[in-house]
Amino acid sequence: MILRILREAGLPRLLATAFIAAVAATPAWSANSASGTTVITMAQGNSVAITITPTTETMTQDVVAPGADWAYQSSAQTWFPAGVTDGWVYTPAGTAGCTKAAVTTFKGSWGLTAYYTLAPAASPVAVYLAPVGTSCTVPTSAAIALSTNSASPTTLQSGLNKSQTEYYYLLVTSTTGNPIGATTTITITYTAQ
Image (cartoon, rainbow, N blue to C red; front, side):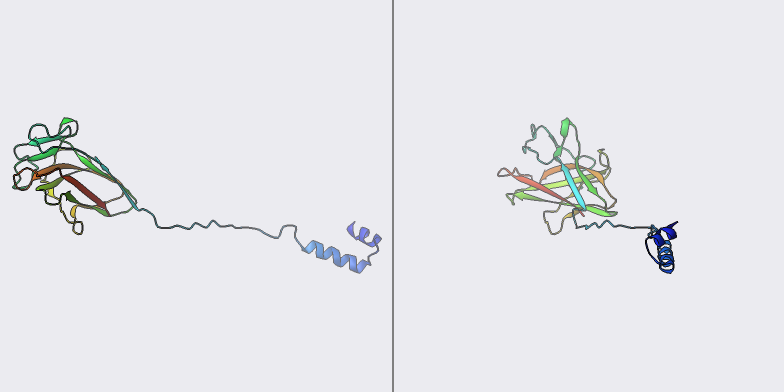
């Protein structure tokens, strides 16, 4: 049919036959597959985030009324470090309780360190944290004295894995047995890395 139409259009038989052969040799769809790409440029970001609770507290170096979230312990508790016989314990809701460090990360192995600073720096205050694990329970081991040196912080825990929350009992003591001479700000800095 196509040959007849081409011949009627005035094409010689040999040329019409060659045209038909060329058309027949070219498939209607020559691609059997196709591909495309998505390019994602990934920049470095925060591999670790940390949230500390509480973020602020107020207390008085008072043996009777140290503040709503604090209690003065006049004798050593089972988790007090050796040589510490009294101090102020963080007691949210009126019972000994925990501070916490909630860490979000995809890292497979990380550790937690802490140190504290004082203002004024000469205040006779020491700070201790007793690790209790991933839930707030009474410590089974002695509290750890925190470093006052940011270049050499105290290791609280190591070998932790991915996101988790760690709890600590908090103890503040007098290092000299004398009252502080001025209002003192204690800043505890936690680092997860």
